[in-house]
Picture 1: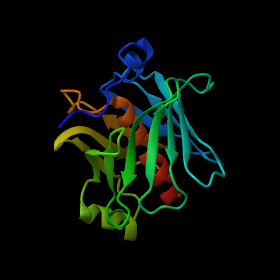
Picture 2: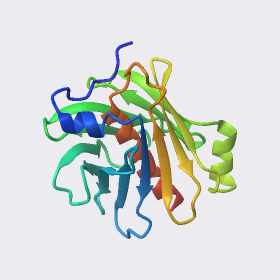
Picture 3: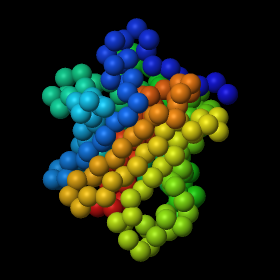
Length: 206
């Protein structure tokens, strides 16, 4: 199976920011409207800043190189309003080109979150799945204090791990691409998936 679209080879910025093996995502706890996230690289520097527009009927997340929001590098937008199997298009605003899409498996995600990774033609190239059915049920019906873990795979091969770290005040998530040694997944699509999961899970638990 071919890899999901590769990052822009002619962009030093993309190669640096999107070329990290590991990231740490932190959600702003005291943001009243919308959602905001800082994404740190392996050296602890801010690689990206993401902001969700408040009061939008369709989710609309923008990813920038910093909190000044002067340079946007990704756009994540829902296609429809209140869709249980929502599809989110991931676009490179600098080129106007679609990177791929992420589709939630609505009915299956009621008990255990599952997502599809789609290419630019909406063909399935990979999956994202919550760690286990048992832990998923515990989180939904007993307590939200059990951190979530998601595994991403392309062509059946692991490409990333998304892991929450329990903290009552700050939502912290580690994103690890170390398993993707052959570059199967476009990092832009992987980072978009992690930000989207943070936004949706944070809203559900909030």
